[in-house]
Image (tube, rainbow, N blue to C red):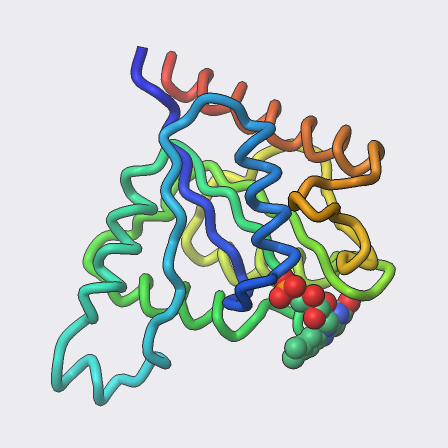
Amino acid sequence: MIQHRLLGICGSLRAPSVNRKLLNEAIRLYGPADVQIADLRLPLYDGDLQDAEGIPQAVEALSAQIADADAVLIATPEYNKAITGVLKNALDWVSRTDANPWKAKLVAIVSASAGRTGGEAGQYSVIHALAAFRPRMSSGPMLTVGEGYKQFDEDGRLINERYVDKLTQVVETLRAEVDDARKS
Ligand SMILES: Cc1cc2nc3c(=O)[nH]c(=O)nc-3n(C[C@H](O)[C@H](O)[C@H](O)COP(=O)(O)O)c2cc1C
C-alpha cells in the first residue's frame, strides 16, 4: 500500500510560528503518510524577474510538490483579517507555472491567530484566493485556534482537548477523502 502523500504549507515564515506547531500537530494526527513541507521563502512576485530569469526553481519545486500530493494541508494565521502576503505570493508564483497543480486537489485549511476568532476571516480569504485554481476543499469542520500563543505546550502539543478533537476530525475527514479519491 502506497503511503498517502501529504504536503504541509504554513502561511507564516516565523520559526516559532504557532501555525507551524498546528501544522505539525495536524500531520501527527493524520497518521502514517509521506509528508513534505513547502518552503515559502520565495522572492516577491515580479513580472520583470520572471521575464529576465524565468520562474524560480523554488517555485517550480513547490508547484511539483502540490501536483504530487494527494492532499495539501494549510495552516496559516490571518494578517489583518486576510491571507498572509507570504501565502498569497506563493499562490501567485505557482499560478505562473505551466500546469495548474491545484486543480481538483484536496485541500484542508486550519488557522491559529492571536485574536479570539483564531483567523476565521483569514481562512475565508485563503479559500477566496484558492478559488481561481479550482481545488477540492475538504469537507471537514472549520478549525480556528484563538489565542494561539497559549494553546501549545513546550513540546508543541495542543493543550485544549476541544481543539485536539476538532483537528482530529479535520485530518480524519481528509484521510478518508484521500482514500476515496484513490479508489475512484
Ligand atoms: C502583519 C500582522 C497582522 C496581523 N493581523 C492579525 C489579525 O487580523 N487577527 C489576529 O487574530 N491576529 C493578527 N496578527 C497576530 C497574529 O495572529 C500572531 O502574530 C500569530 O502568532 C501569527 O501566526 P504565527 O505564530 O503562525 O506566525 C497579526 C500579526 C501580524 C504580524
